[in-house]
Structure formats: structure tokens, C-alpha cells
Amino acid sequence: MNSVVGIDLGMGSIKVVALSQNQENCFLDLIGEAKTPRLEWYKTGGKKAMEEVAKVLKSLLKELKVDNRQVVASLPESEVVSRQVSLPPLKENEIGDALKFEAETFVPYPLDQVSIDYEIMETDDAGRLTVFAIAARNDLIGAYVKLFKMVGLEMMALESPAVSARRLINQMGVSAESVMMFDIGEKFSDIISFKKGNIFFVRSLPIGGESITRAISVSLGLDMASAEEYKKAYGIREMELEGKIKNAIMPVFSSMAEEIRRAMALYTESFNKAVDLLMLSGGGAKMPGLAEELTRVLGVEVQVIAPFLKIDVSRVVAPIDLNLDAYRFSLATGLALRGLK
Image 1 (cartoon, rainbow, N blue to C red):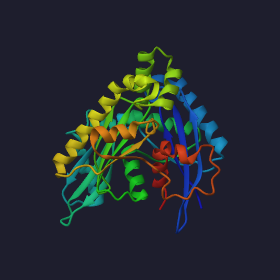
Image 2 (cartoon, rainbow, N blue to C red):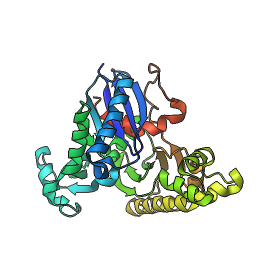
Image 3 (cartoon, rainbow, N blue to C red):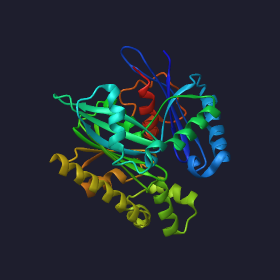
Image 4 (cartoon, one colour):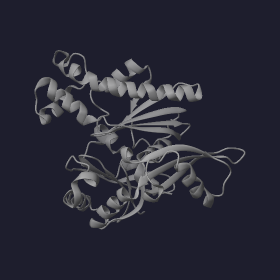
């Protein structure tokens, strides 16, 4: 069985997951992570930053003994433009042209400077299509292609994290009709709303784990490294350190919670139905007390994502504790699932 490799190039770390399958099961073959400079290498760092990230990725792949050079990766959600689009009955080869026309209404760049991809969400009884369209700048795509070539990799696909998330929750068999995912990254967080396993909308926020760490640092007069340790150890629990950590975090938490509340209100307004489940993913998902506090202020069930729920992990010797840290590999897992038939 050939493994399919998913690579999550996050801000601060690279995560790699390799999956394979037979007729009965999906298997985790490899998993690993390496730290990278906390910068947007594709925007600000130029050639030097790209070479630094490529060096880390190459070393990680060598350490994991990854021999498949074809990989699936994702662009940052904050750098793509996406929209749910309704189309009349069309043949597959007509959808691309139709989306170019629709893209003029929501893509803020000249269309000759972007590439447009799509996923068909639904086809109704009359043949009308609901499509999730994604547009990304060609220079951004080019930066990713160049990086992977430097490492000797060939991209099978480069996609939106929202599409990867949809694939993963469907593979997990999440039964709730209305699901919202809150993915907490280093500098950005993404809200992805699903209805019956299909993407309803996506919103990217310039708030992430670093925002919380900085709030603790400023409030308590700590350096960023110490503030990060306090965040991981105590989080947003009321009683820890006389509530000082929670008080420092609350302004950032309140901003996050309000954005989720708005997204939930939009869903309810659109479908006359409340969101059933909020799933947390990304590096900040297991901050102590976060799930409980979100449940309290939003009145919705909150779960931390379990990406390997229906994946056999018994034959991999993982360098991480899969019981504790699997949630951080949800994006890479969803990407790897793309290549499995």
C-alpha cells in the first residue's frame, strides 16, 4: 500500500501525516512535527526564509523516512478567498468558466492574477449545483510550488484548509447536521461552518495562539517563552494563580467568542436552525478551560477534534503522544485523506 503524505506548513511548525488504506481500514503510517521560524515566509522573508523552511521540511521528511515524493499541502486560509456559489445545471467542463464570471463579484484581485478551484457540495433534483469556490493569487501558489521543488517534492494538490476540514469530519462520521469548526493557529484562526457535511462559509480572523501568549506577557510582565508556558499550563481556568492568567486572556477570548457567536447567528438566520456542535482544532484547541468556557458563553456543545477516530494507529511508532496531541494534526490528516481512494 502506498502512503499519501499530507503536509501542514503552519506558522511556527510543520506537521506531516502519511496515510494508507486497504479495503477495510485506513492506517496511520507516519506522523511528525518540526519547529520553524514564526514568520509568513511566503510574504515577507524572501529567498532566505524560504530556504530556511525548506531545510526544516527536508530534515523532517528524512527523519520520518518519507519515501513518497508526491504530497498534498494547503494554503493559509487567510490568504485565499472563498465563497459558496449556486450554479444552474452545468456539465463538469462548464463549471470553471461559470465560476470565472461569478468570481468577479467576490475576488478582490484581477482575475488574470488568480487561480480558481472548486468543490461541488451538492446537486439538487433539478441538477442545480452548490459549489464551494476558492481563489488564490498565482504568486502565492508559485511560492509553494517553488518551496516544494527545493525539497524534491511534487504536489498532488494544493488546497484550502476548509476543504481538508470537510473531508476529515466526513471521514470521522460526525453525525451532527450543523457543525462549526474553530481552528486556532499561531497568528490566525479560522471559523468553518458545515451543513450536512458541506461547507457553508469560512471566515479567517487575525487572532491566534500568539495573541493569547502576548496578552499574558503584557499583563504579567513575562517574556513570550514564559507566557507560552503559563498559557499551556493554566489556560483560562478561573482558580489558577488567583485568576491572573484568565484575566489576562479574557479580552482575546472574548473577541474569539464574539466572532464565533456572529458566525453561529448567521447560520441560524440562514437555516432557521442552531449550530449543534463546535469542534476545536489547531495548536490552541486544548488550552486548559477553553472548551468549558466556550460552552458556558455560547451555549453549544464543544469538542476537541479527534482526527484519528476512524484511522488505525496501531502500526505506527509515533514521536508524539497520540492521545494528547492528535488534534494538532487535523489539517495534515485531512490533506492526506485527499489522496486515498
